[in-house]
Image (cartoon, rainbow, N blue to C red; front, top):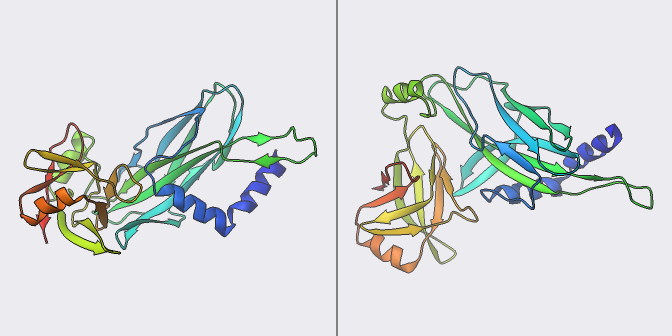
Length: 267
């Protein structure tokens, strides 16, 4: 088993595999038939916390090896970008989970997040079944499941807003919220709605609303487009949507069923 894990870890440095990971991260969630339950799906590390747990439960019929990696999540050129990092450490990074068992993965801060800052990461969970039954005596590793989770980590002075305490904290800072501007941009003769977030908190945008019309819109391959704090992202639009934008009518970002839409300010 240790030999297999060592072989696989060596393969991780392969540039092609890293590019494959980046390609997978461009979707909100990508997975094949999954044998795992994962929770919470929106982990956070508040400023006063040193770590956060993510639980994996093997609901399949056989043991599996699971690998957990954490990538720095940035936005440049209107696209999500991912980098290797050592700021958040997943422990254990690789684990064998027996059928019916649960395993806690601890996500630990290795740095101090600056005050009033939100840092964003992507957690990639790969289920890696190991085939030991090949007739030629070799073993093979293939992806059985891949799951991508967002992780947000906060410095002193702001928080997720998911608790009473962090809501009170954010009220004290007028910028501790998403502050969204919009503009029409063109790339390769195609129109996009560019959203820039000047606020201190990221936001997940699932669509847009103008008057009584709602539009589902994707950012690249993402079903939902996160606009990170200080970042900007380009959303696909159709001709009908573009026509309404040109009329300069108020436009709102839809951010969830139970949350008030956010008014976008034209640049």
